[in-house]
Image (tube, rainbow, N blue to C red; front, side, top):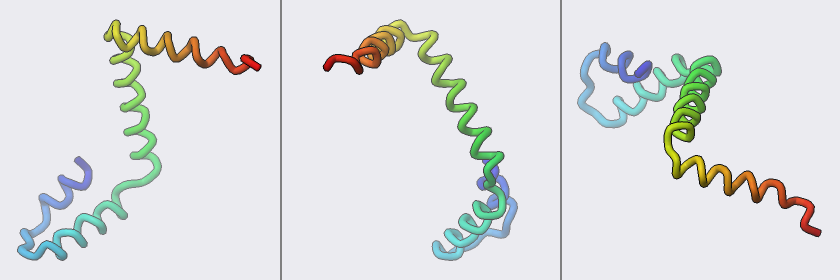
Length: 74
């Protein structure tokens, strides 16, 4: 949304290269580590909610947990 909103406020451009450059410049100026970390936290929250609400996902997660304990098979 950050990039989309900024580009939407600019004058319309007819050339694809010009539009590409505008997007790259806005991305470089607007996207920083704070935004990336915020997006990552949002993704983790959504994944956690999904796993908590989906019974099939819970059983898959439990199966992976079982495999994680088998490091000492030797």
